[in-house]
Length: 138
Image (tube, rainbow, N blue to C red; front, side):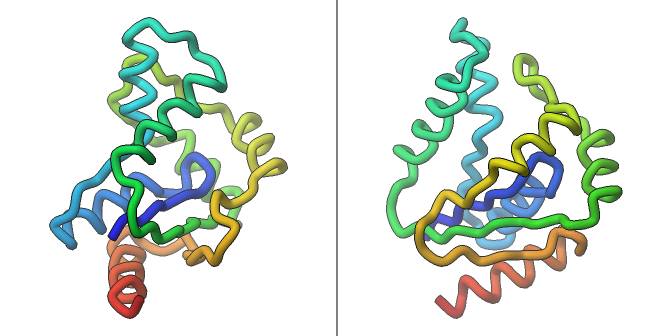
């Protein structure tokens, strides 16, 4: 089974996906390191390069998808998480809070079907436990 965890930057997507993968002994395919590698290879920092990263990940793991969206409605906490996170990406800069808010205004889930919504205010461990349980019932 492949699970896509989506949401705005700073909601905890990578932490939840990595936790679920570790718990499930699954592979974790993250978009940002793919995009970082594309940028490092000399591709320009454009929307098309970002889309190419998503398409590369989709091509790697295209079967049996489950869509999950993390939502963090507490804007103060969301901003705190975004502005304090530190990731080891050489070519992909962190988005600003204004950029995240612009994405939020245009945000739409990837799937036309049903998405599992999870409230990202909870701890990563709690989110992983809930997600693992909900996926086991699929």
